[in-house]
Image (cartoon, rainbow, N blue to C red; front, top):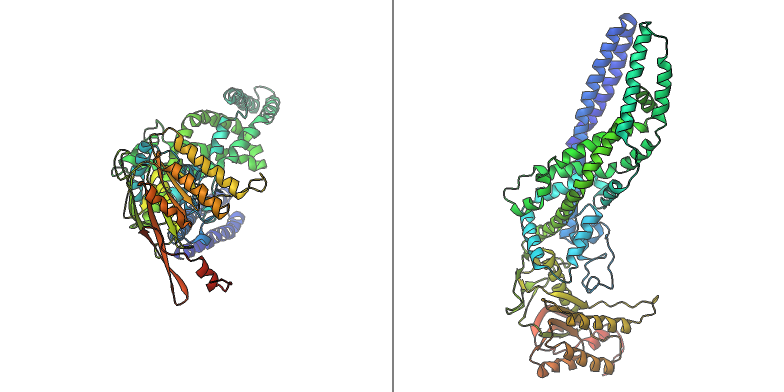
Length: 588
């Protein structure tokens, strides 16, 4: 890298300045006067400081370029669903949630992991919260959608948000807990009034100076040593300062990057992004620039860092009340931060989560569309054209279209093993989760009413709680009925895979029929995937039940699936075919 070569050159220049300066200083000290040696030393120090300053700029540029390169590699991994090169998942799925585990919203191979570009735990949690909405707020969803649309057109802005919040390429993808700063602000680390103590210390310093001068003028005896001793005792007995600064210095690694992030948010011209500008208004309308406030905090913490050099700390505090002055400064600015910082952080956290959704939209363009919302009173209530699964690479993704006309309608989905039934259910659920989060759906067209969602696709038993798979499934399905009965302005969309799979064939069929009949005509609509071909006869019993299926065929001894949705019940099954193909005995 060219910049690395420049950095290496600066390292050699720094060494050369020191060595040459020391070599020339030796004869100057011997053959000339002390003032000339001092002047030469100052010149060398000034040159060295200038070289160091330029070298730091080069190193900072290298650091930022390395982070940017790593960020682009992350984006490529997200676009290509390269799971091995994505950061580890932040959350594990909650089996009790109505669909988090069923749709792969979180976990190792999940929607959240492939979308998440946030740098903080709080922004990652906000993103997860939006993807797990069970009862959508249409106004909030539309507001987020407008923000994501604008942020999709601002890739440099989004990248810099991540760049400035990241300390090094190695930490990209690792989350920080920024609310610890708020905990620090809320904690009362000391009740000491540092302003009063500073006034006392200044009085000691003035007295020391005055008494020392008068002693040198032989006006009074050497009593300044007494006041100096009292001053030293007063200064170095303030043990609470150490604790006060210690808490603050622990926050320094979190606070330092915020200055650059806030500065970026403040300086960006939002003329073409009115919704983003409105979101960032707390940064633009603040009486004092947030980045300037944090710059002051960083200066104070830098001064407090002198405590890490015991000799320099002792000498300086003997002369002036260094610690007391900066403790007072920090105490005052904490009052400002306590009021303003929560608002700034919350805005930044939301901006990070929205930027993650916008990056997802950008990386998946042109396979996405921003959904259109239909009033609950209109029909059809759901219509998707060429809808695809977000967690299947675009090159292998097979898209399908689906229309649900009215509330209370049910689609029975039949088909052979591995034909795509479960994947299709998750395709619908994942795209609705993206929709209500404010992101685009993977589809050519996507129109929907604001659905509540509930799923029974991946039911888990619990050995520790003594719950069998069948009992866990029954409880899950009972929860679905309870949700249908709950009073709501929005219908429930339910997605069920292999109803009552935990029991025998006869009881499964009887139970399934009874359960499906109870779902017809309710404040909801759904799709039920099943292997039980006897259930397709329910379409003859109820007008609100329609049959759909996925097909398969055997070619040259291999199972071939087209993964396309077809109307009507499945004409084939393939369990016996698969058994035969794998060499298992099958009676004809």
